[in-house]
Length: 447
Image (cartoon, rainbow, N blue to C red):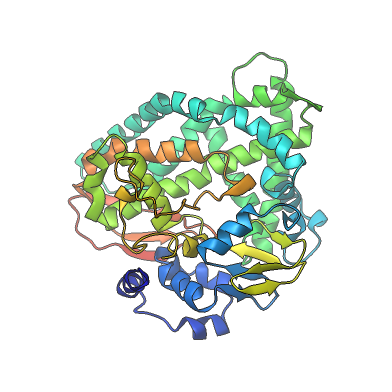
């Protein structure tokens, strides 16, 4: 199995195969991960780390683990052993000096039990599999409208950026859930993208200032919105959160803002990035497109394999800190160590997945699933698993299903550009044309 993974990495490496030991000796691992060539195919680097430095120690003492067993243990560890630590979001400077970092610190992803448990119960009222299933037909109608417009433009000979399609669905779906105009959701989406930047170790002072400004603007918008919606009897998610009661009474204003931020962050920019990545993968690596039209569970299996193979989140940006000494990858990491999990490495570990370098949706098809394969870690696992995972997967499935009649005639027509955040693989532009034959090229979008 390891031979298959290694050959996949060597053959597909667009850079011809780098000496990763030399690269990492002269550049930080997160800077390397944000390189556009690596972002287009991070598997060679992930394989090298997993095989040669499964517990990689950065110059500042942080650790990055890349084997499936270690990443899974890290994500599932009880709080007596591993805790998320909000103060670790910003590597330098005081957290309290930055509104954006405080906003991130208040989200459910950076809270430990019992606060996490209380908020998680609230989230799961609104993101159960049954509620997500009820949204499927609305989702299909939104995508169908977008694909209809896309088809008209393509038929007229236009070049079309599929990133707009990827953004359109989550924006309009969130517009329905929050009862807000799409233009407001788009503006909030921009705020959220800025606010999330402190998660990126490569952040600059200018980007941090943008994050702080956006955090203040989003907070003010949500406070005003909640004041107007509370007690109004609406069926939207904002009203539901404003009127939520649990064992401790109503949610605090700060809790509601943090929840709205989290719902937006997971529901718009992240989903848009994953949909764009799914479309890119399907267009430039077409060998399994036909599997989308297979059994009733084909689309779901395809998306599950896509999440494993492409791993949109290359690593979890949440700072996890060892409460006591912990053994990972055969090494003892001392208490106080800050540890991150390389999801890309874990999802291609030959000890967890049979032939991990082969894109094989059948491994997750209910009719033929191989019991030897482990659970995919793209959405995380344990208590901090993404609460919107069902919704995100459903949106990707519907998008691929609706656009599938066009796929055989679409060709990438120009440079594919990538985002600048090291932890998420974000396709920023994906230009296509009917019947175009220009090869796909990847460039990193510059600020």
